[in-house]
Image (tube, rainbow, N blue to C red; front, side, top):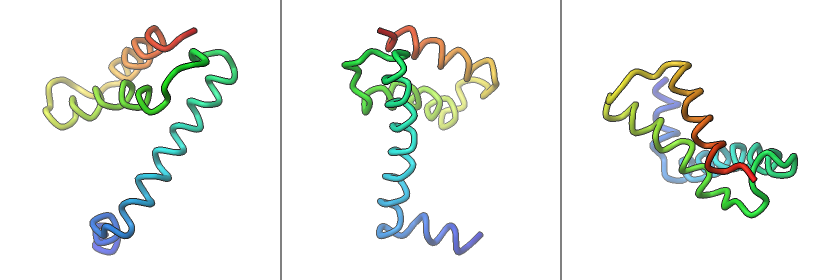
Length: 84
């Protein structure tokens, strides 16, 4: 665990890990875009922020429970905003 913490805290490691994680999520959004599930002109960077920022805020501020129902509500709100 200490080695993992050290890697996550290392700026040389942190950047690439964050980029890979973001790109994997963005690739999923690209697939949804190609399938017509998201608007063709959707800004995928903004889409990631719309999808994940509420989750991180709720986790960080403990403003409510992190439940499957909350996750479903986030996805529903996201899709309503981003559908073609």
